[in-house]
Image 1 (cartoon, rainbow, N blue to C red):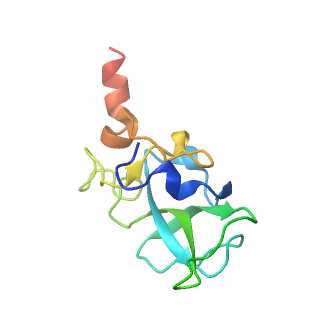
Image 2 (image 1 turned 45 degrees about the vertical axis):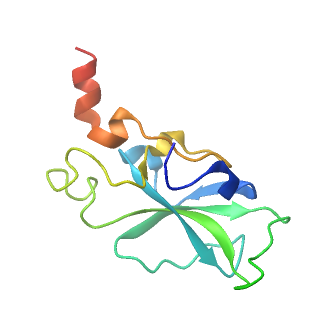
Length: 127
């Protein structure tokens, strides 16, 4: 599991919406963003691109101080492995990176050999 999120952070997730095919990526970054709405596409204000996000159920309540909902967003930055396979993360991965194949509603994504080392690590482990 990611050390940055807990399943307690995700208790009101109802669905995960993918904007791009998650099987195309070795990893995606996951984070909790604060948004005004619980069930529409959230705004994205980072470099790179959002590739998915969570929808919250009707029981989700906004933070009493800010009035915002905490929702999970999945994203990639310009220097991530999908855009620069020979770059900084040709081996290894950022701390918030998880294998998108392990992402489920109300479950934190997991780190796998593929997410942490890339597809070549899986090929080498099969030899």
